[in-house]
Amino acid sequence: MDTVIYSASPLKAFSGALFLLVFLFGLGGFGFLSAIFSRRDKMLMRVGQGCVSFFLLLVGVVSAIVTFNTYQGGKNTVLVIVEEKNIVKRNCDRSTPCIDYVLDTTDGKKIYVFGVNEDTYDLIEVSACYKFTYYPAKSLLGEYLQTDNAYEDLYETTGNLSLIEKASCP
Image (cartoon, rainbow, N blue to C red; front, side, top):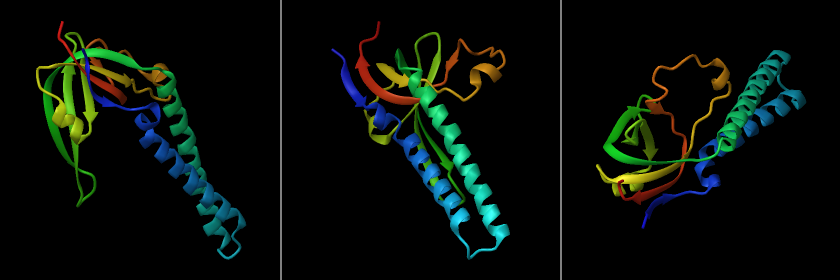
């Protein structure tokens, strides 16, 4: 019997991307409307604010398309063995350190790298088998712009996790 380690609805799996979209559209829309209807600022300032706001809205549209493509791509489920657990420390900015919890896994043919939260990281055991269900990351024009990748059969880009189950090894 498989034990559920982590479970997330699609809304929870994509909550970070949805928050980003709301932020971009909110800030871009408010700035654009402010640039149009504000009469107190000089014309050059309003045009600059409008251009920046338009850029934010454009980035929001592109982000929405990428998020939708990732969601529409469907879920993949893989049975993997966790080879290594890593805590990756990096600088988010000059004074704030960020910590990522990374699982290096393999199914014997491909390598999969999953980023998880701290609680899930603590529950995962090295050399144990797990079923990971995730949405593979899709880029905007990746299928059209990507050149031949010599490592395509060796590495898979993972995206938003929706389920982790402990499983028995084959």
